[in-house]
Length: 191
Image (cartoon, rainbow, N blue to C red; front, top):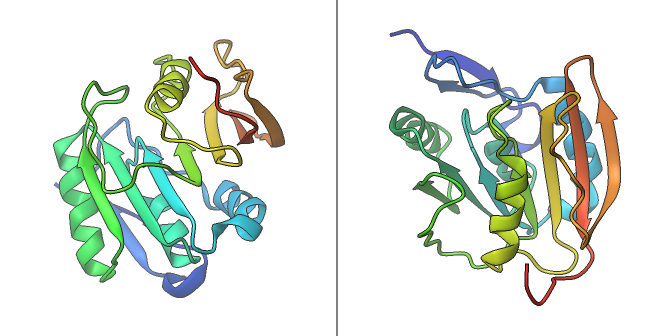
């Protein structure tokens, strides 16, 4: 089975390629969108603790580490994806990474990290996972006031509603994708 690859576009691993299994549901975030995202995150990324839900190829999480994040937790449910993430971890000699196999929203979720400064939320399209994933993050106390959320969805996704406790900092669209940078303003007492 041949592997696909994607390159890291900035930071200490700039130009390095990571591989991922040729699974139909994997669609790494395009270079142009990643460049925009990390330009948005530049003032916040140094020493940030990040959570990459639906990690897939892992390119977002590895890009964050490459550009100065302190720690990244990568979560995916697929065993082939998890195996590939672990291989890339070794290839890059990356440290400060935790890889967790879990289906989100997960009933049990144990991580070394309790709260996250930045969360990358890029679930498979057309499965309605954004709203329950946002609710899960709020219920698990994974966020704090000031946490940033990057949300990527298919264009015209009708179930994406801005949580009451968040504000949109940035938003862009391509022909097929909408993506947002949100900031948590406050943590509700019950979600």
